[in-house]
Length: 86
Image 1 (cartoon, rainbow, N blue to C red):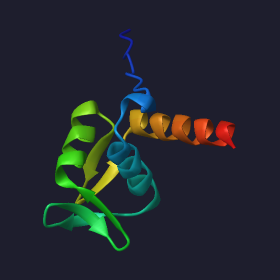
Image 2: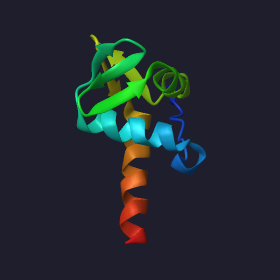
Image 3: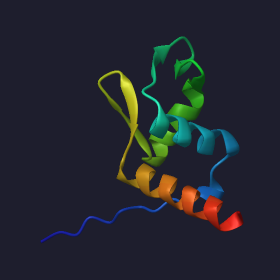
Image 4: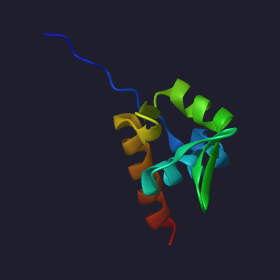
């Protein structure tokens, strides 16, 4: 039996734009548009999407970006830390 090691990304190591993009991808169904993905009022640049994709946090499902398991875990950690601050 082989064990798959899930990589945990600490959200504090991500940039503000990357954290914002994770929240937008989780909340909205974004479609391809020039220079990125978006749907009013949300927009994610192509460079930010590619950086998250290289970290293994997002992937394309058809035409729409979706969070992977690691992305969902990072989003949950961001929400939990946000609740601790308030």
